Length: 421
Image 1: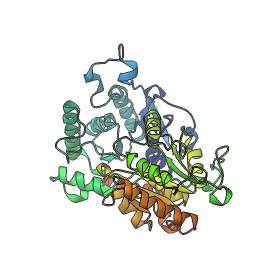
Image 2: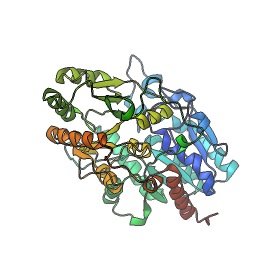
Image 3: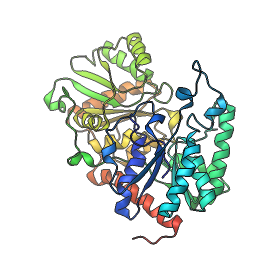
Image 4: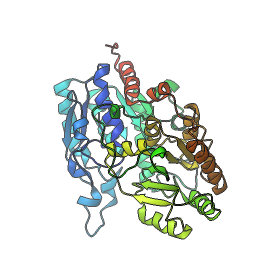
């Protein structure tokens, strides 16, 4: 398993997919061998997630330099050192280490996950040298040409490099895994030469550990659900991207509802936890005059963030139309928390479809301030009355990382021609 996002990296939800697979695959008859960078590669690192790596998982960490932090002079570095990403130097140490792992353990398959693209280049090289079947996990899209005026990535050289890597994946991989139906459709359109059965859907998921001894204490000062406080706490946990989760229509709706007396800082508060763009958001809150009803909060360790979700009166999901083929990882954690969910998104996107499939209809159009206001008022009424829809326990169980690992194990069995243990 070739993955950049893995402990001891700290921050964000990106490490949880690989970590979840590594934890649960042994129950499915597969022993994970994880190849990841050493701590030097990460701008933030810590040991909070290291204890969750299973005893049956072998981990090899090799040197990877971040071009922006380690190879820059006066803040500048040659662009060629950051193709296909800033950690391209990882390839130099990871390929020899991967070959040693292959010789020592004789694995049945290779799996790599994007982002970071260098992980795919490492897996591609190992596949060429070993002949092992390779599964390319496309957690995010490498390319997006749906808008000719705004292609992704916007840099022409990087776009060309990503396109070349995607074609190598098409030529050399045994399977391509996508995390949403929209992403799988987009890959099938771009790689129309491939048979449809080369693509597999394995979504992100949630962890079940909070039911057991891994449960973290509720963050200090966090009240319980609505019955224990006068003020309704609506929580958004995670990054608020200026484009992909633009909150300005919501802020405009909050300003209007506050002005009309529908919302009051004594009875309602929106908490934006670990936004990644606090300075920008603070300016918007001041501009809209809603700093008393919206609070910016710092990053929490993951286990504590999950506990905060479970203690909130409601959970807010933001996802703009330009991300219709993506589902935020937090959506699955929201479902697991069994708290009412307000999703402000595009109703034609995969996030809205996923929530409707789970029985949740408290949705609104993020692009429309009037619909944000309508959806928020309806949501608050339902939640305060205890009538907001929640996913059923059976539905939640189907979204677990154990269930996703079962799906990956089935795919590994297929591509390696192993029989299920």
